Image (cartoon, rainbow, N blue to C red; front, side):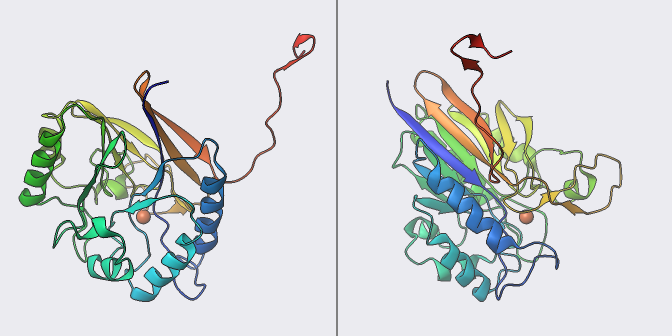
Length: 276
Ligand SMILES: [Fe+2]
């Protein structure tokens, strides 16, 4: 077996402080605790965990304190990017030991070279706005960063979906100018995936010459409503995570897992063969 890397991704924990429920309905703190328990027990053990933004619900310092308190139980290295519900300054202030968050002085954009898969985090957050944007400066940085290692399989992660999801109210707050990002990504064939959150459900779409995947919610989902002008609503569907498994033999393969326990596993076969 050659080189390999197992990367878990969760998204949109939307943590609130003081035991408050998100939208007065969702116990997001408990949902994150359960997700962490699931990730800690995965076998084989992931090399790291990515969290693709909306770490807290309103960007408040006490929310980051609660988020950090819960995250302490995660027994795996973790890397964070901000979403539209986050606040750059409060996030940095809460995680001074996360050195990678300080690679740039303004944006929470970073590159990690410690694994067989190269990880690039982008900061698409726009203070006070639900939609996402990448500045010309960030796109230039991305282009230069990707040019450094054209042979290393790479995951690029940002919060906002850079594709049209078909969920109307979310498509009014996507990544603006996704073509500018696609143009950069297309210059670098080593980009295996563009990963995002924001839509709180698993969606796969072609993005330039690569595949974009959004991560399921760790607590609540955006309702699967493809009707034009569908209302902005959420749904308590089974929370999940993504597992991106890369090996030199197979390349990048992405799985979805669920956090809640379901009956099983059961065998297909017994001593007489396939069970009838
Ligand atoms: Fe979110």
